[in-house]
Amino acid sequence: MFITICTFAITIQLKNNMARPKQDRKIGHPPLMQGFKPFGIPPHLLSSVSLLFDEYEAIRLLDYEGMNQEQAAEKMNVSRPTLTRIYEKARKTLATAFVEGKMIIIEGGNVQFEKQWFRCKRCFKLIGGLENHVRCINCKNYFTDELTPINKI
Image (cartoon, rainbow, N blue to C red):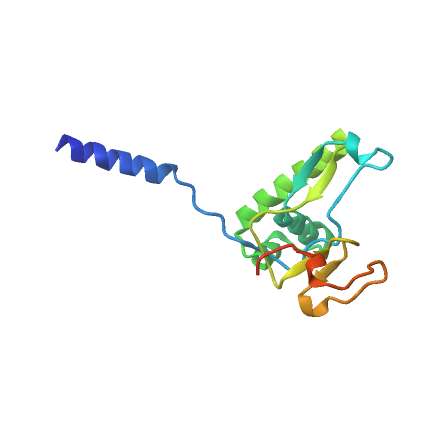
């Protein structure tokens, strides 16, 4: 009897400590750039902060597109409170970068793009789908092995 009660208590405690897996946030397309750096300071002298793709998207939808939080949350497939948390984290990251003079690297996170995206390893051009890969002026070669996938579909 005692062993059964202890096992039950441990099971309840383990379930309470397990975090719910994060749901993928919907993103239309990745940013054109991979990040930003303060003007006039060589990159090797700077530290950096990461701005996740979903944080970038929250800034884009709310501040650039002018959507309200309900509209942006629906577009990203998250609840409004979740969008608010994502947005607040993004603002904190940007403020840290501006005030402390850090590079901003835009990368990662639990996101799902509408289609497969690639970035050219040579010229860093953003390409939406292999069918749209054409030889650009800056690249001497035209091969799919020069492309780095940005996302999963």
